[in-house]
Length: 105
Image (cartoon, rainbow, N blue to C red; front, top):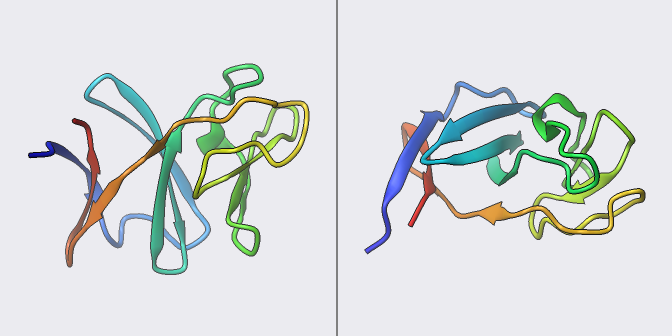
């Protein structure tokens, strides 16, 4: 059975917002687009800059690294623009009526 760790309440993030969480040894950028939530590794694969500090692109379902402008698909973690060429991890979420949790094992 999978273990989860609670990140925040469902309404703690505004649509279009990203926030960093450190939980269970993981550094996670949690992103809300409309009523959907996405979790990716918070370190840009190009220079390990925090993705949660970057801009969220809701229409593209991407997050942009604020340091050099690489964007990453929030569904797959794949880079969508240079200079990043390697994906970031994507984490499974459990969203219930009140909370957003990440699967940690």
